[in-house]
Figure: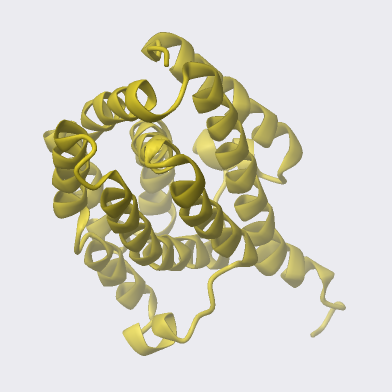
Length: 233
């Protein structure tokens, strides 16, 4: 077992995201607030809701896998899960403003990349315990702190502030509850008890590769599909 250095782990996350910026169309511009597309953004928020629902189930399963092996870790993960439950409704408010109903959202199948991500976390919880899931949760919070305000403000400038009301509320909630710090402490505990720092870096690498796959699929299903249509269609 080994301790995780936060500065090094965050540097690795930034390095791995840079690789995705280089391979996925428009991803760098999106995360720097230089580009956004209405159809792309709506589908991104829809997938965010679908992924939150699945992520809550994955977190609950990871908590189950901790069981009575580490009450401190279980309490940290349970706190995070409790504070995150219901947050998808903040995003559905914005989707409704864009014209997507709950019925349409519920009928939207998740991307293959999302299914692969959630399946990976579920299988790793069985094989390796809670560390991979906590690393994913930390990355979500790190990513949100670093990039979501930029993307959201670009969306507000393009579509109007009323279209990002719920998304802004979610960002404010995470900031006020310091979820990035909570989840790194949770990750540190999970890695110390169930894994190693070296394995944690391997998990993070896989997870960010899967996020790159998601953004590739998102682009190809919206902007890419539209651009591939014959002129006049």
